[in-house]
Image (cartoon, rainbow, N blue to C red; front, side, top):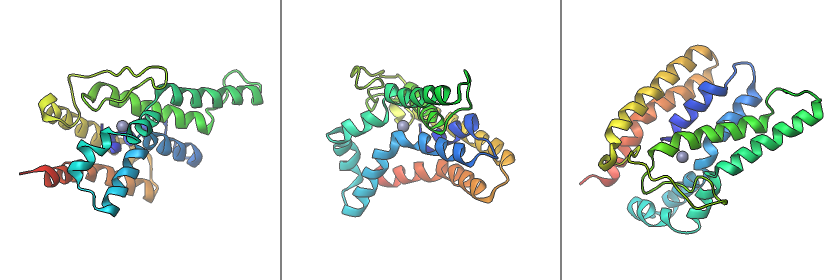
Length: 200
Ligand SMILES: [Zn+2]
């Protein structure tokens, strides 16, 4: 799915208006699996590498394959969440401690992976890296029109805008509302960007 949808899903599940640490953790966790992709995109813009070469060649070669495998590894995200939670249990002596920051981060990253799992075809990540290179090749793509990309895109935008509206009413803080508005805007801006890059 698109980055803003990952952010909105994780926020809808984990965000609490009076807990800035928890909210920062969920934002970082939701973005972390795509961090290598952002870095690659920034590098390409700075060095003038064409988008076509970037997404058809560089993205599918090393070191990007390993970097995206790390970011999208369910066992790694689960291990971070579980280790932090186990430590909190041991430290507080309580069987069910409040979710530690790193656990929220790991769980938010897992919601990102769960969202991506059913909507990647040729660009599927090895979900259980480094345990296995197996990847689920879905019949549905979140972007490729040859694999229902248009229909899923419409569904994803509807879901994202609905979640943004719900969060908008829950959070009165200006920066949160500005971020939500940016997320909604991205449902127009991202397809427009790809259209301009690859049209004609
Ligand atoms: Zn992703």
